[in-house]
Image (cartoon, rainbow, N blue to C red; front, top):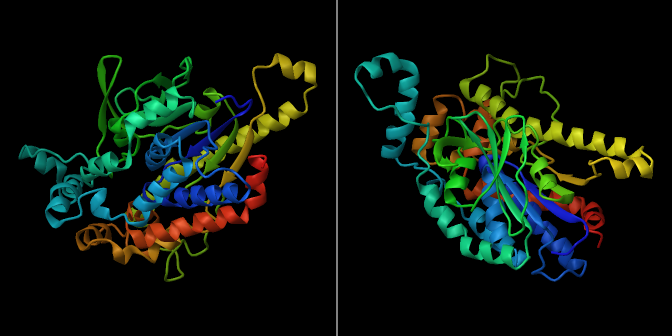
Length: 393
């Protein structure tokens, strides 16, 4: 790609919340098509993803030779998704993972005496492997990179073994890896195992082993310890970055604590878990956006001579994030979860409105994801002028 300023796309994490990203991408495709762009033209040189956003990013990158087709493929998946395509939702599967995992938390000392093999997570995401193979066309990814239709793809994970945040990137160009405090970049062939690791929500899904430099490390969700979510795109050469969030970046606190009774009560386990998830998936992005805007403002004050001497360059930024609380939307769709999952989640309060934040990450059901897709479309169409200005159409 010979564009002077490379354009990057950042798709953040958030489990089922990633359906919102698909609505944003569909609206961008429509806005650019109306502005005269060919439907197949890929507007992004660099695509980066984390957690479920890494899955969307890789599926889109595989079809960088036909952006419209890539977006449609994502729409087909997310508009027809079911929990059973992502994790086991049958009674036996829930008993083997979730019920045993919760029992281990309560009676771990006793179960250890019985030498019971402890489950690795609350849910078994084995079905996700099949879904990834249906979504991705990895040989096509190699082709679009070698043909220059895409500059780079990056996905992130977090190593439980070494404690580092990892960025795996694939590019036909020779891009030197970077190292920062507790952050490593590794050039690699992106595969299903990287996406399983990147989307392994802590406690919910099991860690995935990855081989790094000849040794094995167990890795989990890329949103953990992700201090600078936008930095991979910048390191890979982006000078314009579109960020699609998976939750509202600024949230006014509720006086009622999110309780349908209108009176704050002691938080349930699900409410605490949802709060922790928001810290993992949302807070670092908001901080990084603020940091980037501050750097841009500082650079704008420098005279041209000094600006040429600094390695820092201004980065144009466009952020599109949900205009509504996704946990509120999730609370309206909890009933669509399979009965064994509802039973499991009700035990920790995730089926109540105040605990719906946790459910919002696990609600891989089309009634919920279609609502998020429509929200993404509306939010992006409301920013149409900003989108056109960003792409300079």
